[in-house]
Image (cartoon, rainbow, N blue to C red):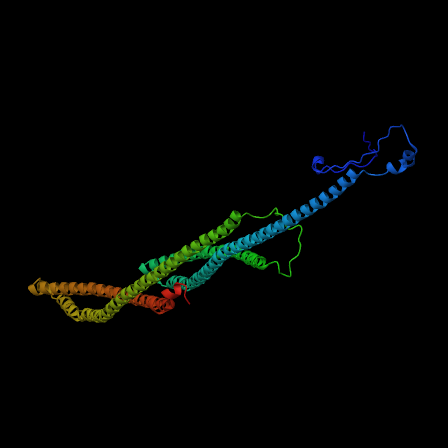
Length: 446
């Protein structure tokens, strides 16, 4: 029977099956007795020793552990090298993809920056054109002050006509129409000018939005372009531990593009409104200038026609005055002739009456109603009747002379009034109207 020394020791690792290792046993000497002196003497040495099988097992375990550790280390090195390569390739792919995304983002920013810059140039040019239209409107509005002053001055000057010349004629109607037209044009130009100023302000607000967006795009482009130029060999790279997060106020690509699109759309809308307003301003200035010049021509024609009428009437009155003066002279001669004729009848009447008186002293029967008596009485009657007729004609002639004198005074007064009217209309009003602005001036051009 073989005996083994049993001692307390740590268990051996069970990495290798026991049946696969060779087992060697040491045979103890067969002891037929219960004890011996030699066994007692070596008992202390045998209890502290490993068995040979255990020593071999420990050796095999160390060998296997070394083999296993080397194999694990080799696998770890291989996996580490493979993982490092994969991580390097992944890092390069990620960096290349990020660089590509930055390039695509730069293209997007460049596109919107170019669109914003184009729209800024367009709305800036449109605003400049609208400013020119504003200046034209202001110039046209300023130019209407002269026509209005001329029209009101003409009306006030024509109020100084006297007598029957103070008439509401065609010239006055045209002047009133011209003054009302100028006032309406001024109101229209003022409203259009206010609308233009408001549109310029709106254009500048839209331009400011575009410029702020464009400035942000330029800054973002420079930032992304700088980021795109970073590489692993860059000297100004460093750790930023809190950079890998999304800010609360960030936008999405859709809202980012929509923001620029809305700004451009708003600017295009205001630019189209500005273009339409400029077209309206051109039409207004052209129509108002043509209307004012047309009315000015109508007033000038009315003045020319009225002056011609007054001149013709004055000429006819002067002709009538000339004839009246001649008639006054003839009538005065006629009155003098009538007075002389009446005076000339005094002698025949005296002769006839003296004859009758003398014959009234015929004596007795000689106081006869003979034909002589009848003829003398008839002669006195005829002479008296002739004197009455002549006196009557004298009164009529004197009345005609007075009428002629009144007519002469009236004609002279009317001629003087018409001369005054011609002076006002021709020398003052029509001369003043030569300062009327041209169509170019009324259109707002300097």
